[in-house]
Image (tube, rainbow over all chains, first blue to last red; front, side, top):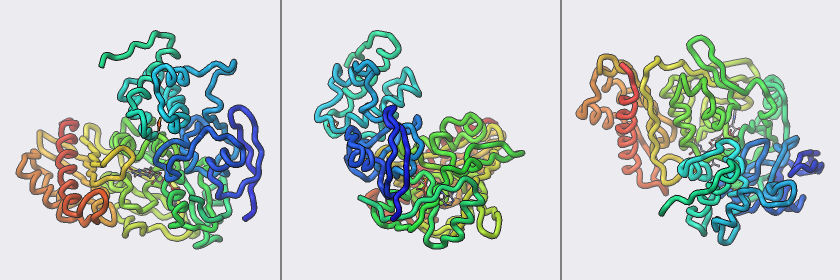
Length: 166
Length: 288
Ligand SMILES: Cc1cc2nc3c(=O)[nH]c(=O)nc-3n(C[C@H](O)[C@H](O)[C@H](O)COP(=O)(O)OP(=O)(O)OC[C@H]3O[C@@H](n4cnc5c(N)ncnc54)[C@H](O)[C@@H]3O)c2cc1C
Ligand code: FES
Ligand code: FES
């Protein structure tokens, strides 16, 4: 099958490449571009480990063809840290609050939470849980992931994070 | 999980898309959000030789009021539906339903047009469209047709769409101000299709049901419009005995398959439970 020319911005860098139309975005990023932060958990559109930010939307990159992303502006976990190299508030939150165990779901979780906090600067616990309901974690039980996102929201809002009493 | 090979097309007008699809015939398939089609292509349950992506067609986007109707472009996503003030103020059941579809990532890309055109009995919007009395605008090689949602669904994955058709818009008559509404969906977890679900739109006058319409999701090969059940309720105060009769009438038209969501009988009963809950919530929300 003839290949298609695509051009997209990934983490601020313009990428030009030839892809087979059937190439999924996750395979394009991982196998052709060596951007391996987005993970493949299920490959069946359920787990969210492959989540990337595409034109301001959180999408499962295993359920998008690379050709559909032609012209898009994409951010993966590799592009989440601050410009000066320090950790983004979310990354710091996941570290401080133990928001990960094996870490497999973490790139997708953080990329999803990144968009969630753009849309809702001060989400309630319920809104966080609903907002990350497309991301599965097999380790943490989510409690600390929620705390990590609350930590990040507080930090981005310039207030001290208060852990709710348990 | 790599789909079969295909050629990719990205027209920028409905005219070009229809022309392409007419030329490609059975070799072509429209691609909207891709969140039903791509999973099927990965499983090789669908192996189109050509995909005609509708994402570049501006005229398929957005929603507008047109007299007493609202016309929604087929490519409006579920995420956009949730965020639309126009739709939420005029037809709030759309937001309530969208929030119960899949998960945030799926909703950013999944479209209303794709949801209603897909023909999967598990899709949530078709029963809501039947409940609302929506009409689909369909463009084919021979021009535009308008098809009532209530006449659109013929079997699992069989609809009134013919090869080469593009569903361009969904036209919904705005329900009366003060109407009550609810979409009640039983699912095993977030992101799951319905075990059973019920959509209700009703109006109340002086404590009695003035008009009532009911749709049921995933309890037959097609979504169901429960006309008899609704008729039983009109004129009643939604007292327990009448609701029980209506629930029985709704259950009687279901013919669910047994699957991982439960045996057929259970799913029929759950359709009844969802209907009773939807009626109670719609009543509480109705003014008049
Ligand atoms: C994990 C997961 C969970 C989900 N859960 C739910 C759920 O709970 N409820 C639910 O309703 N859905 C659910 N879905 C499906 C999702 O809502 C899909 O987005 C939707 O069914 C199809 O919309 P789409 O825009 O993605 O269409 P596509 O997948 O692109 O297309 C679906 C079909 O419709 C055809 N088509 C699409 N648009 C048009 C058009 N304008 N004209 C003619 N033909 C067209 C395509 O050719 C294809 O055959 C889920 C999906 C996933 C991946
Ligand atoms: S790998 Fe994409 S959703 Fe699981
Ligand atoms: S930390 Fe292991 S899957 Fe989430």
